Structures are given as structure tokens and as C-alpha cells.
Image (cartoon, rainbow, N blue to C red):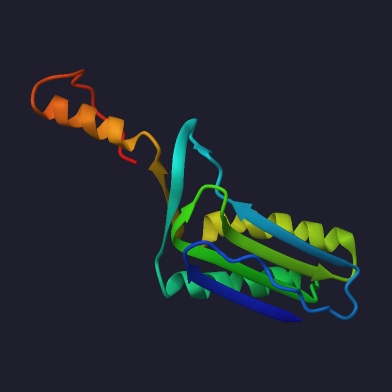
Length: 152
């Protein structure tokens, strides 16, 4: 079993040629891309923050747990920190197993648990942030709607 984990600054580069994994009947590759809409609003990017080195340890632990539970041959996980623009890759997961069912199960469980167990957070960079800042300034001066703005 091979487990590889990395957390790196900025968007993830396109994957290179993946090494063949002997015995693999399933080789799945998931790319998590930054969408243009977050919570129904347009964004420019996501800013990822990790509580390191705890995030590194938790990610490694999660990888090993999932790899053992599903008898995987290979599990590789890469996650971004810092700014990742819309359309760019912020998360990549490769799962290799002798058969399709455990590979698909491992991928689904890993992604669900990553969101719960690993201290990596995302904050949207709103496309309309300038508009909100303008409204906030007007409200501070006693003009405008006077509404409270939800923090980004």
C-alpha cells in the first residue's frame, strides 16, 4: 500500500503521468475545482487556511485509515492552502484498488471525512466585495441602507 499526502500553496498543477500500480483494477482520480458560485453568490477565488501541523497529521491519519479499511493499493491526496482562483484545482485524490467498488467507496468516504476531520477551511473571495465595502462605508458615515453585512 502506498500513501502520499501533501498540502501546498496555491492551485495544484495539472497531474503528471501517474505511475502504474500493479494489481489495480480501478484507478480513480478526483479533481476538486473552485466553482464560480459559493452560497448563491459569485466568487473570484477561495482562500484556504490550514491549522498546521495538525492538518498534516490528520490528513495522513485519514489516508492511512481509509487505505486500510478498503484494502487500497494506493491513496494519494493533495490539498491547497492560500488563494485558488475559480476554475483551478484545490484538491486532488487518487485511489487505486484491485476492484471498482472499494475504490468508489473509499473515494466517497474520504471526501466526506476530509470536510469533518481535517482542519482546513475555505473563505470565499466575493466578486461583489467592492460593492459591499462601498455600502459598508456609506452605512458607517450614516448613509445608505444601514444594514449589517454578513462577514465573508
